[in-house]
Amino acid sequence: MLTRTGAPAKEPLSIAGEGPARGAGAQVEVRGLRHAFGELAVIHRLDLSVAEHEVVGLVGTSGCGKSTLLELVAGLREPLAGTVAIAGQAAASERLAGCAYMPQRDLLLPWYSAIDNAALALRNRGASRAQARAAAAGLFERFGLAGFERTRPTELSGGMRQRVAFLRTLLAGKEVLLLDEPFASLDAITRGEMQQWLAQALGADPRTVLLVSHDVEEALYLCDRVLVLSPRPGRVLAELEPPSPRAADRDGAVTEARFGELRAAALAALREGAA
Image (cartoon, rainbow, N blue to C red):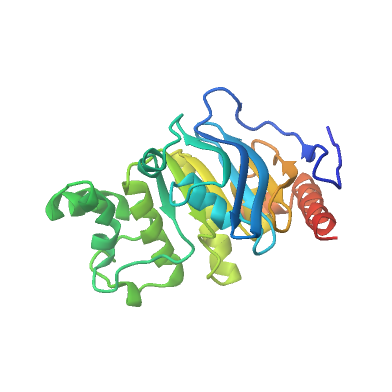
């Protein structure tokens, strides 16, 4: 089904696929969300539901409210109007307790080794240093980090730093992950490799994910559903669902004819919203 819109009052463009069921029991629920900084409106009447173990992407131009939306979901900000809930909990403290937030920068502590950076989430949950290290060490090989446990962040490649940061996010033990441009600082080749790696990691350890990206191709490859947001104030222009199952490798996925159609639809929605 395909419908189009050019005005906020109409339904957003929707290209349906076979993503997870949504609605009742959604782990992330946003209704009628509005937010502003003073007189600057950044989000306008936004609705969003994310089902258990669904990966939902948010794409849009800079300044359209994507990162602000993650901060609102995480409980780091309170909305001007509307409701935000994680697992039915709407209080900011409950939202913060119910999710793990990975910002754009990896924020690794330079004086900590890779394993101590990854284990930091466990230390914050009360584990001893030895317990936290042991738990993190068991995952280093799976995350392609074996042999780098004692390495400082300055000695790691950008991709490896992102893996450590993501491992730290997973070890926080939260069912909901909020990922803000996790690979934006990487070169194109490394970014592609990390996208395929993240897809495999989420396949092995499913979580409910809200992913912010400027990269339409990245979002379509990693996500079950992609929402295209308008320029500020952010509202949903289009909802796209990549075909399922998708190709196991990234190169195979992004060269599929259907993938190209969805990429073109997303870019057209972005151009239309900016007009």
